[in-house]
Amino acid sequence: MGEKVPIAIGRQIAGDGVRASGDRTRRRSQGAGHVHCRGCVGAAIAVLLPVAAIAACSGGSPSPASTETASPTTSSPSPAPAPTSSTDLASARAQAKVREFYAVEDAVGADPTTPLSKLEIVAVSSALEADRHEYQQWRDDGWLQHGATRLVEVNVLSVNLDNSDPSHGVVPTVAINVCIDVSGGAVVNKDGKPVAPSDAPKRGWEHILVSNYLWDKDPANGWRVASVSTLNDPPCDDA
Image (cartoon, rainbow, N blue to C red; front, side):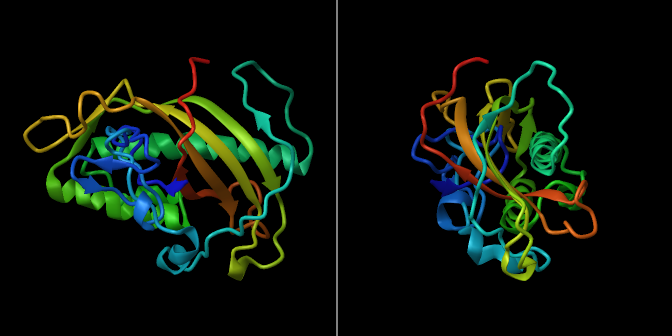
């Protein structure tokens, strides 16, 4: 499992667990922490940073500890009872943050005038550092995203509310696998030509850790995507 480079649409699914866009490897596979290239999911799925290595790069928030507990659950489009337990609330809030994360990435990729600081409302740690770097590269190269990333499946794998050592990344964390579909968009270069090959995969899985470094002060709204990794699993079917 590599870490993802952002840009779901830019991230076309590469099939080798790494998001790459054209000739440039996007963060994931190399330890940049998060590799996805929105409009290039296949070709754009590239370069991640090792989660632990980037903690210091994003405002001092270390990557979350990888200990995960709780039973896997799958989100459903059907209305569900309002969550009541701390675990259920954390799961619901983390899923909502994941959806917001992809929407913000889409917005940042589509409009070069959107401040990169907007990423701070949805990401932290290696995910934030990787996205900042990725989108700055896009802007330097004149890349733009058209269309939006669709989340086909959002599956909660585990919920761990341990907040015993925030300075070392032991914070409440929800692990989620997301199947993204980028068929409705594309990333183009400054000449308006698609960055990803025409035969690049349009769907793929990403593993996301959503953490709350502000648990003591803001258990409800402190959730942020802390890391994103590209998975080599077979693409999901239509929900």
